[in-house]
Length: 108
Image (tube, rainbow, N blue to C red; front, side, top):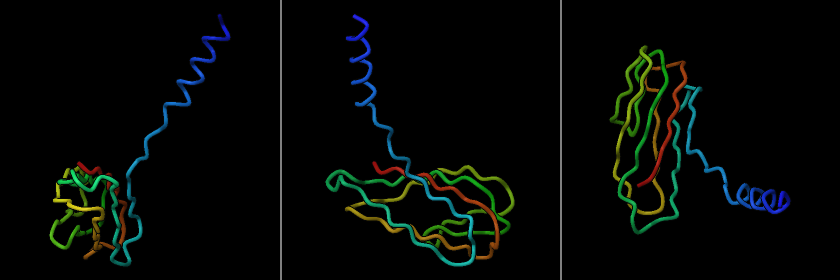
């Protein structure tokens, strides 16, 4: 009986795969950076959700138009249109020279 329970738990553990975390971390503010986000689901994609956290010493930009303010610790959720297989997310340090920003993303 113990062997059967152990075997069932072993199979269950094999079936539970840790999901991939979709995270970009930016800690170098010297150049503009482009991140390519891909999705296997091409028919149903409509929205890219970004959860932006972190700090910087001055203003930074996402997609050239979304300003991330300096100084304060931010925790912002942003939704962008996403159609197709790829989306290029552009980050510009703008005036910032140091900091650490983390961007978690998901495609819906």
